[in-house]
Length: 74
Length: 229
Image (cartoon, rainbow over all chains, first blue to last red; front, top):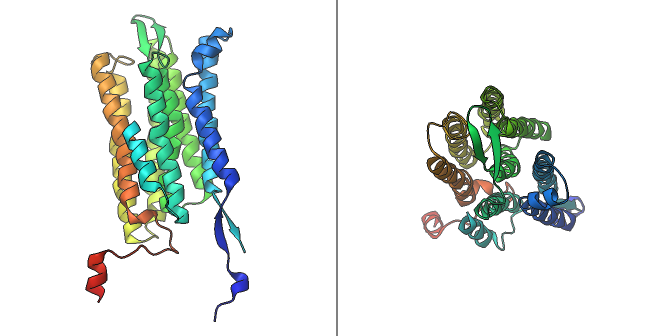
């Protein structure tokens, strides 16, 4: 006989889903952002590193959200 | 790349398995961002020029590096999830991977050949560490899992080891390095490598039953079901 009180189910964490989508949109947008940053007076190298940082940070964000994509509910 | 993205989306639509969802989320994003990077290079946005002493002006496709900063950690995460390693190992692996790409980026923007080759060397050493982690920590963790997982993990690790090794070789003989091959060959080479390392990787991973969670047994095929009878 199973003990129902100890059973947990994995539920999709909507915050993580939204986080993944937002990170993806930022990462995709950043690939096209360099000319805009330069037109605002930012030098190429600075703009380039801003874009690169955006890619890395969004990748790390996605890793975090994927690792927390489900939450256990009892 | 875009076809690969849509194929993975279509294949993953309606998947309910907890672990499979994670693999699909990661694997769809990889060619998705690579498609955006290629689009930006196609429109001339992802391209810049760097003045290099003794070599003149070099065309640098910076969007390629930005793409790698996003996609390589996610590809490694797929392997880490397959091997079921702890978060510290995942963090270390991705940290070394980020170092590999960032030092490659510095090399691409350097204005003397000595600096470019030095940063290439640093990046390649970081890459060797990534390979070392894959072939030691992750491989031994994968050995604790089912035969299906081990087989998929080994296939993907070989794919990564071979294809990722070709990147620094192509870089050093390409226009950004020694200039042995022209821009056309280099661009085509990187394109083939990118498609194989991202879409090919995803194709192998998502076709495998290894992505299904331990708690949810896969449906037996018709042949297996009748054989059981």
